[in-house]
Length: 216
Picture: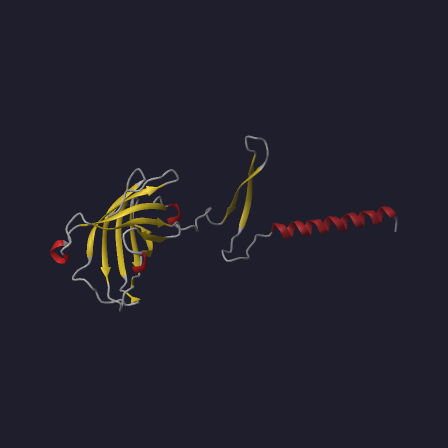
């Protein structure tokens, strides 16, 4: 066999190996929880002159799996107040009385956390909740506040607090209504003659905020 023939065979073998490797990389990726199947990769030349990755096209729209709550403008930190309205006949609480206030954080994943600036920490001043978007500007929140009786050294009854709020068009405030169902320690029996109701007002806390209205 001539050296030229051997050279051709070596070149052919090497070429087939390279094609096999390339074919392996070209197969759609199907492993993983999302069973994501890539199709094409697009590139563009940015204005500063270097190449940059732009987008991977897939069988599903980009980020279509992302929960809509992540794009909701309610997400962020807020200063809030609960103001009594409509409780005098059933509970003897006058309109306009501030029942609670503090800070609440609406997370992008649909969870919520409130810290009260009115309740004593030893009685329980933290609430955890979940929320959903009900319209372009409206939201519903359900959170629970656990309480503690420091005198008896026993758990107090939980409170379920429902809110229906509307975000202001400036995205820096919201208003709405709330209803508090204060329960006995059994977690089932209403401990007040009726739920506590009223209005809620809140203002956004941003990176430049350095004041917060005092609470009673």
